[in-house]
Image (cartoon, rainbow, N blue to C red; front, side, top):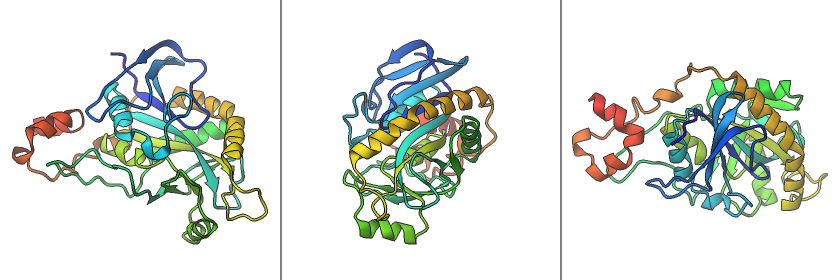
Length: 289
């Protein structure tokens, strides 16, 4: 199976990465089912990169229906250590205008129908999640965005809603009162699962609209979102190319050891079937013991 240390999870409108060479499509089945689509693995500027369209090619998977666990597990099985996600978001902050990019540093979880952990069924783990995005990877992506000429902002709070309907105006105003900056549907549970898999995770949030709180702008529609997101696709691809070329071989963050103090179940009490299922994630810690 081909290997890659860097992965890109594409959102609405981003279904491929231009410039990838030595491409191979990988069809992976995981203990959590199949990923959103076949994973494209190749070289980008000499670095091994895996690309996965979050909603599948042709965008046929609802945000709630995305097989998040299968996606992250499959990327982990390819050797991925860093993930850059592309997400479309609505702005809750006058400062963040349509067509701007945000590299957020915080999340608020308003989802309610998604499985958000690999654990359970006899194995308990509690990951640290105070800083939900990798600071090192986020800084690198932000600098690449600035160098690509994008209007980019670093730091901000992303509210993740269930969808697929957009917010009511009352909800939008509520999230603004909380100090949230943007709203979208796909950063969670992706970020939590990446942390459980000890993968660095950062996103490029592409602002497509002002959500429905802003009476001076058109009501948010899927057509507006896709139209504006497509305007940002070339910029996103350029940012990815720059970021991938700058990622150092070694990590200097804590993401790679997130499970070292998180597993609380005694190994001797873990069900064998669940240990086998999660071996890719926890095996190194059990073997140490």
